[in-house]
Image (cartoon, rainbow, N blue to C red; front, top):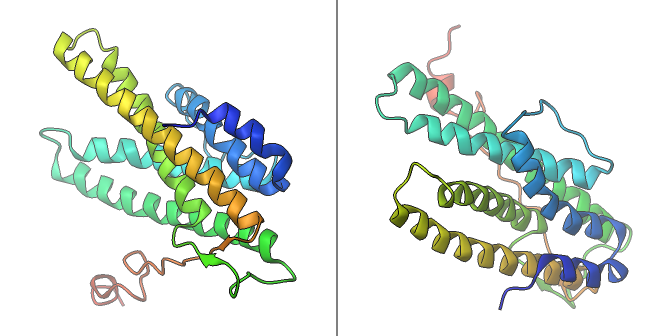
Length: 219
C-alpha cells in the first residue's frame, strides 16, 4: 500500500538529522513549484538551505528537460529547431547529473564526516538518495501533466478517463517511492546501509573526450 507523504514526513522529523529532514521535506514542495513555473520560470532559484537549493535546481533541470523533449517531437518542426533543442537537452542533462552528484556529495559528507562509511557492518545501497530524488522529481512532473490531460476539456471523455486511471497509478508510484526514500534515509542514519557518490564522467559534452568534437574543431 502507498504511504501518504505528510504522515511519513512527520514521523521521520524527530529521528533524522537536519540535512536528511530537509531532503525529505523538499520533495513534496516540488509540486507547488511545478505549478508556479508554468506561469513564470526562474533563472537561478535559491532556497534557504544547500540541500533544498540543490533539490530545486535538480527539479528545474528536469522541468526544462521535459519541455525541451516536447518541443523536439513537435510535428513538422524544422531541422534547425530539432538540432538546437538537442543541444539544449544535452546541456540540461549535464546540469541534472551535476546536481545529483553535488547533492549526494553534500549528504555523504554530512553522514560520514570523520568516521567514514560503515563498510564492514552495513549493506552498500546501489541507488543513492539523490537518484531517488531525481526519480521523484520526474514523477512530480508526470503527475502534474497527467492531471492536466485528465481535466482537458477539448479532449474526448475516453481520453480523460484513461488519464485519470494513469494519474492514480502515478500517484501510487510517487507515494511508494517517497516511502522508499524515507526508509533509505533511516537506514543510512542508523548505519544499516551506506552509499557511494557515483560520478557520471559524462563524455559527450566534454570537448576533450568526444571525438566528434575534437576531431572537427577549428584550429
